[in-house]
Image 1 (cartoon, rainbow, N blue to C red):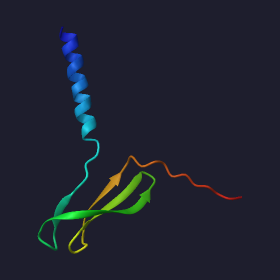
Image 2 (tube, rainbow, N blue to C red):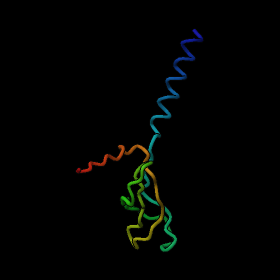
Image 3 (tube, rainbow, N blue to C red):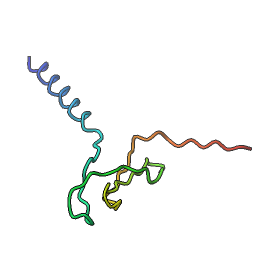
Length: 81
């Protein structure tokens, strides 16, 4: 009975970890507006380790944060001879 309980605990922990793999910001603190404001997500750079996004204030367009998405597909280059 204890092996089954252990298995169920491990499975529930795996589900909890997978549900928070990636978080998306909807509002962040803007130093210019001096308040928590809604944000827009803008692709800033495509890097070898992932895509870098910048969060912008919807009211004054100030940068309020960045995020690197490491789940991006690898970059493929096609070169013509």
